[in-house]
Image (cartoon, rainbow, N blue to C red; front, side, top):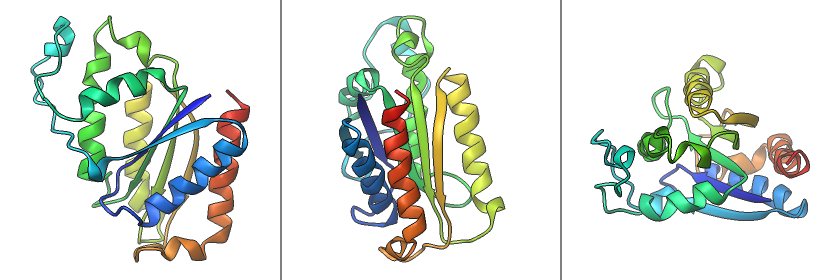
Length: 185
C-alpha cells in the first residue's frame, strides 16, 4: 500500500508536519510505503484554466506538480494535511488541489477515481465553525473527483509551532488513522 502524504503548511517542522509524521508512523507500522511531500519546499503554481491537460498535452505550468502527477496516480491513499488559514486550507494546499483539474478529463480520471483520501487539519482556534468550512471544501472536492474520504483528524487549539506535542490524545488518534488507512486498503 502506498500512502502519499501531502503537507500543505509552510512550516517545515510545524504542527501539521508533526501530525503527518504521526499518521505516517502508523501507516508504516501497518506495512505501508509512505511518501511525504512538503508543498512549502516545492513550486506549485496556480491553475489558470487553460485545459491543456484535457486536450492530452502537458500542463503549461513547468513546475513541481508535473512530477507529482505520477505519484498521485500511483498512490493508494492520499493524505491532505493543512493548517486552517482564514477558514480555508493554506494557499499551498489550494494551489495543489486546483491542479487536480488534470484529473477531470476522461483520459486522466481513472488515475484518481475510487482512490481513498484522508484529511488532517490543525488550527489555533477551538471552535468547529472555524475548521468546518475546510472539511466541507475537502468533502465536496473529493466527491467531485470520485474519491472516497477514508478518515479525518482535526486538532484545534495549536497555534505555536510544536504545540501539538501537548495533544497526546490527538497524536494517538493520528497514529490510529495511519494504521486504519493500511488495514482497510
